[in-house]
Length: 96
Image (cartoon, rainbow, N blue to C red; front, side):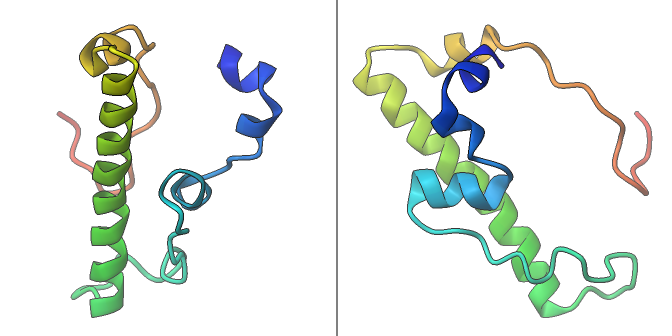
C-alpha cells in the first residue's frame, strides 16, 4: 500500500479493467458485470466475461514474471513478502 500512497500514477488504477488497460494495453469489457449471475444456465456472454476475467489475471501474472525476470528478481520471493488478502467469501461459496 505504501507504493500506491506515494505514487500518484498508481492511485489512478481502480479495478481490473483499468489495470489491464495500463499493463496489457486493452481494458476489459465490463458489460456483463452487473448481469443476473444466479440464474442458470449462464448466458454465453456471461461465460465469456468470466473466462476473460480469469484469463487476464494469467496475462497480468505473466507480465509480472517477465518484469521480475528483467530485474533479476524472483516472483515467488516478491509474492511471499506480500501481506495475505483478507475478505469475505463470495456469495454462494461453500465455506471450507
